[in-house]
Length: 545
Ligand code: NG1
Ligand code: ZN
Image 1: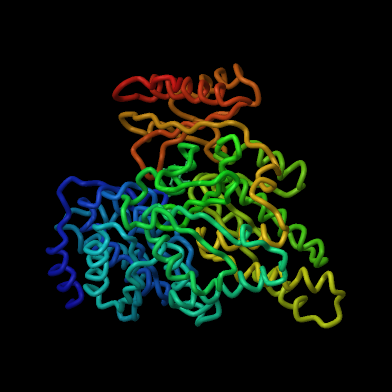
Image 2: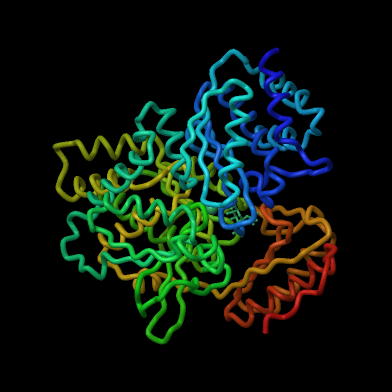
C-alpha cells in the first residue's frame, strides 16, 4: 500500500538506534532528547492510528516536564483530553521498541489488533515546550502523522494542559470552549473575574502573586494571558526563561522536593508565591514567615482548600452530590487525617501517576484529585454539572442557594477538568482565597504537615521492587517490607514506603514522622534497606545530617 511506502521512506529519516529499549512510563516516554527522534516519529504514527480508531482528534505533547533541559519526552492525549488508555500505552511501547526493519510489522499488528479502518480520516494536534530539542522532535511527530496521511495542526509552544484543553474542545465541538490558546485564556480568565467580582474588599496586596515560571513554557503563557486578567490578579513573574535554565534550581519539583524557595526570586516575608513546573501542569504555593522559615503549601494543601470550599458551597446550595478527594501514598498523613476526620470527606488512595487519580475521581459527582507534588484538578460528573446549572438558572430559589450555585458554576468554568493545570489551579486557588478573604498563612494553618523526606536510591534493576496496596507495601524483594516495618516502629507518627520510579531509573523512598530529624533518619535507614536488599549500585546512601 502506498501509505506504508511513505512510512518506510520517512522512517529512514528517523532511525532507531539499535538495542535501545524504552518504556511508556508514568507519563509517556521520557529520556535524554538525543534518544528520542525515532520515538517521536513513531508516536506520530501511533497518534494517527489512535485518531482513526476513535474517529476523533488526538493530541501529542512534546515535553519532559520537570526533568532537566537536556531530556525530552512525549505523551499522547485521548479525545476528551485525558491521558491515552492503558492498552495503547502497550502499543506505544511495542511500536517504540520495534527494530527498524520490523517497524511496518509492528504497525500492521496494531492495525490488525485494533481493527483499524485505514481509510478513516485522522487528525492530530501537536504541541511542544521550550526545550531546545523540542522543535525538531515535534517535527518528527508531524512527519509520523503525515507518513500515514493524517491531518495535523501544530500548536507550537503550549503548556501541556493547554494542549489537553484544545483536544477536548475540538472533540466536543466547542462545548468545552474554543479550541485555541486564546479561547483557553478567555474561558478561564472570565470565570476567574466572575468569581472574584464580588470580593470588593480585596486589597492590592491580596491581588498580588509572585510566580516562579521554572524558566519554562508556563512563564511565556502567563505573560500572554496577563491582559485577560484585567489587573484582578497581578503577577510578578520570575524565572521567565530570559536568563536561567529550565527547571534548574527552580520550578515546582525543585521547591517540593528540596522544601526550599527557588533561586532567582526575591521573596518578602509573608508574600504569597507559587512555582510552576517545566510544562505547567503542576503548581505549589509557599511563603516565608517573619523569621525566615519556609512554608510549603503543596498538592495536599490545595486539595484540602478546594474540597473544603466546594463542600461548603454544595451544602449552601442544598445539593446532595457525592464529593471525594483522591490522593496517592505521597499525600502527607496530616492531610488525609484532616480530610477524613475533621472535614468528613471521603478520601481514596491510588497508585502514583495522574491517570490513576483521574480515573478514581471520575467515580464521584465531584472528584478532587491531587498528587502531593502539585499535579491535580477537580472533575465534575455530567449529572453534577447539570444540577448546578439548573439551580443557577432556577428563579424560585432563595438568595443563599442561588449565590452558591452561581459560584459553583463559575468554579467549574475556572477549572481545566482534562488534566492538572498550573494556570487553572492558580486561578482557582487565588479565587478561593479572595472569596474566603483568606491569607496564605491562614490557609497554611488548616492543618500542620508531618515532617517528611523523599530520597532516591540507585539499584541495578528497579523492577525487582513490586508493590501492592496503592504502592504502600513492597511485595518483593523478600524481606524488604519487613525491614521497613521494623524501622517505622522506631519512630513516632511514622510511615514509610518505597516504589520504583516510572520516570527515572531510581527507587523512590518516602518517610514521614513527628520531627524532621526522625523523618530524615527513617528515610535514610529505609534507603539503606533498599540498597542492601534490592541490589543497590554505587556508594551506600549517606545520612542526611
Ligand atoms: P515517578 O517518577 O513515577 O515517581 C513522578 C512523580 C509522579 C508523577 C510523574 C509524572 C513523585 C513522587 N512522582 O513519577 O507523581 O507526577 O513523575 O510527572 O512526585
Ligand atoms: Zn509537568
